[in-house]
Image (cartoon, rainbow, N blue to C red; front, side, top):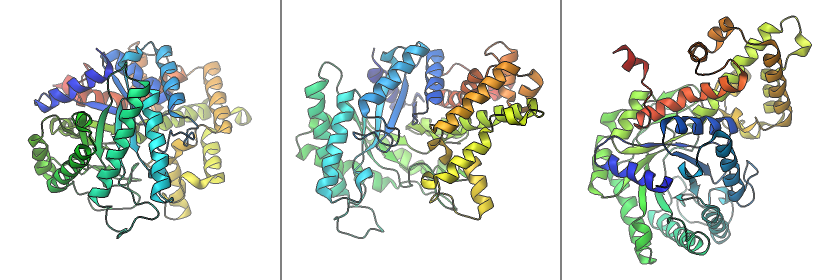
Length: 446
């Protein structure tokens, strides 16, 4: 059975109340992808990997990769890990005119059609259609959402392009499946302090479904509508620089009940990063069974590198000139090029310095590909491999990894420690989705 069909079975079983789900890896960071594939291989599950319209597009996006290049990149990593390519489901997130909001609608949508065409042609099978943003010449009050009718009409047009691309280039493979709708908050985390996050109203969710279905059918896309599997809504979860809005089951009860009226549809939840395992489990049980995670994984990657850098500082305290200086170099690179964090991190200079390192939004993730940081990471790894990492220092800075080294699950070498730290997060999602046999600490104690 291929990854797409396994994915559909997970969703069907969720509809039946079996508490199954799937977490979606929203990152192009290599260590994150390795960790996610290792986790999937151990669990015997598929891995869902998604790229956004900002990360990967026909012009390269901010990763520098086109859709076909990203597919090759993912498959190369899978081959190294030993995970079958058939166990990988690739998804495109927020596919639409998001990157071209400053252009007139005709030009922006023209670019969007090329985007969707290239994604499907490259082999992406889970397609999130999102045309919810105002374009340069759209009329209306920009303090309010773009009308459902315009959003649905544009999504249907993009779906037709996806269907045509599949027929021309991918007809020997299963047809793509679709996700509709959009979350209320800005992707990647809240930008300012808030008191709470409202869940999508059931009326709004039903309106999105009804208007989008109408647009699909009017465009002769009945077969494609039958492959619409999920609706993106806001269940009331979000995170900011130093705060997490936890899932509160009671606040989303009416939204949970609303999806039960639709056969073959579930919810997709974005910005689920930093939720508790209990909250993630409840989300899956309440039919928010596709859980997007991204910044939490790169945050764990950053935590691991910082921990290793602190170990290096201790080991090389008498050899300052030989240290990698990784943490300081990251700060320097972010200050030299503030493009990816400046508008997201308000406050005093001290607050901004803190956020550049430790914000849950993790804007530092955009900077790791920098060549000077790559050199610093290589120096850090070389130093630690040469010097060795003592168990006592590992216990101090990476206690979970210390435990796994002691039990023989991993070796005390930098790459394995980094991967294992990322898996600390992944296993929480795997358990919440009923994909992992690894027990939580609470289950063990009970």
